[in-house]
Image (cartoon, rainbow, N blue to C red; front, side, top):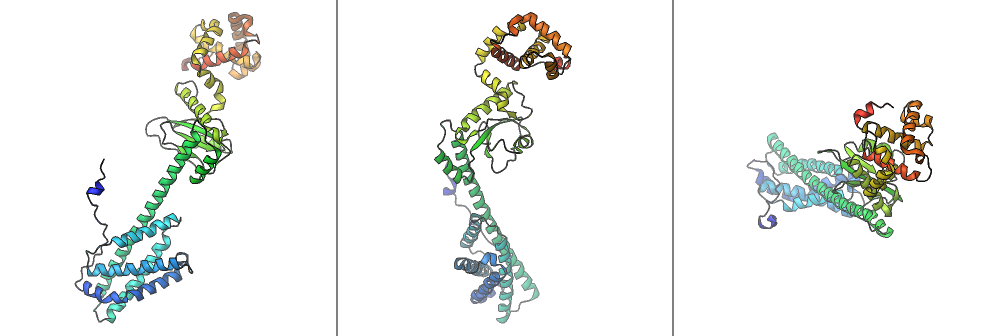
Length: 418
């Protein structure tokens, strides 16, 4: 697309004052010789009342203030004499001053205060000079001039603010670009070098931690608001698959942070790793989020990936897992659906509890007699193989995978009985 600004010149930024007095041009010309003295008075007043701005002993700062005051008063008189005169240099000067203050990390409060001091001194000095020259300066004329001076002041203040805001926006954009570059390095599969990471982290003003974790994100619906994050978290919300890099993820208060800050998002918190291995944390967190989307992991709260490692690992070889399920759980798969899930859940917990009916009952919130009844049914189905230590891990994994792949219907959960 062609750059239209090259073909169509943009209108020049104007500074205007609303003075319609017939005597204004002649008074302005007559007052021109008084500008240096009035500007010097204003600069001295600023140095006394605003030492934080003037910074005594700093000749560059002194010269900058003197130029700003002198050029400002002179330009104001030029506008009185010739209202249509250009303001290009003044616009550039004050925007540049605003930008410099932003780059130095300072606010514009002192400059706005200095402008008010200069305006007051200028109005007083110019009025006295006009009267000394024999011009009849009525109260109405003074009021008109005062209005013009402060209107001019407001326009200069606007230029200061524009330059300040633009510089801040550019700095923020530059910092954002550097942080996105750092994020790309940290998530690279090849694994960045420590030296490269340190340099990129320094450029991005991000304290490089020893360990971190990746939080994979997915919005729960349209219009999900970006989470509010602390400055130490490196955001990757611009990515097609959003994520965060979180230093010290196991530190105090981090888990509560997930609950508060990530409302409206499905989130999976990857394992804590060294910063050169964050690609692994990213891969596992995204795997967990994908399984959550399939209904295999509960994502009603942020997912701690390490708590779901078995299902994540098994689902990478889903075809093989399904073959193992068919072989190891064949007796169970012949049971009618309403009872199949309860028996599978009981067998899984029994394997974990060493077939202690009382402990299993406590885990499943059932009566111990109900558990014993189910264990008898399971023993009829599986025989002695149910208690064999050989192949127990395979049976446990098959049960866990089958239960994840076959969630119990809500109605059956409400009607749990032996």
